[in-house]
Length: 356
Ligand SMILES: [Mn+2]
Image (cartoon, rainbow, N blue to C red; front, side, top):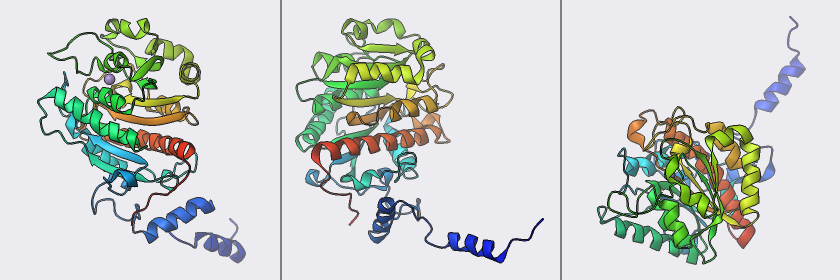
């Protein structure tokens, strides 16, 4: 074997010089240096300090926020396994090792607008479901009034209905919905119309979403016969059998047909993902989407007007390894990038995220 020439070794040593993390992209690199200057070096010690979603600064002053990352420990109305109220805390922890730079797109949401960890919605009367629903709707209504786009971590899916009510502008938002279940059951369940089987029927009846601009993907399992409302009002339901035939590209084409370039909300129920990949969910369903398929579906939405999104039904007690929360953190970062891009496009790049 030939000896390394001194010249070659010198070249290798030269390439190894520099900071721990540096980017050949000048914009990304200036961000990395700004983070360090603002003492927000996310790579330094993930176990120390206050936890926040994606290491974003904690803020609750609405005027300072463009994109709010919010924990919604909403558990009332969960019919099967308990523990979803622990979801936001777990997702927050795992989100800290996600971002701040998108690996495929080389973009930084924190450079596009002011991203903040808004904290958690609190529920002073957690056994009074009507008051919980009201509370969520009120907070997200103030987000809409302040032109804030939210990314939320639940919590049972029941929470998405008041989120949509709060964000609705009277025109009916479009929706991409990844789930094993359509969540459009009629009537009351276990004593209330507010439950995680009726989420999108409730939102549609109130005019918060436009059913003809809604696509539901990943639907399967023994509850499937209960979702006829979806088809009757014009939602595009893509069950797992159809998805297996048409694939990611086919599903994205259907989404394009339904939502076009108009505003839409992305809601991901963790049970949309196959229980093999994501066991920590309230009602696990086998034979579902792979994590890679969900990633490609989500990434395929880039360029469309995503005005908010959520990840629901994360149930950490059933996943002591944190695999499920890790997936939520990763998918949430994809959503954060797209929500920040939409905000910057709609309102202009007025400010960056500041850790000062
Ligand atoms: Mn659901």
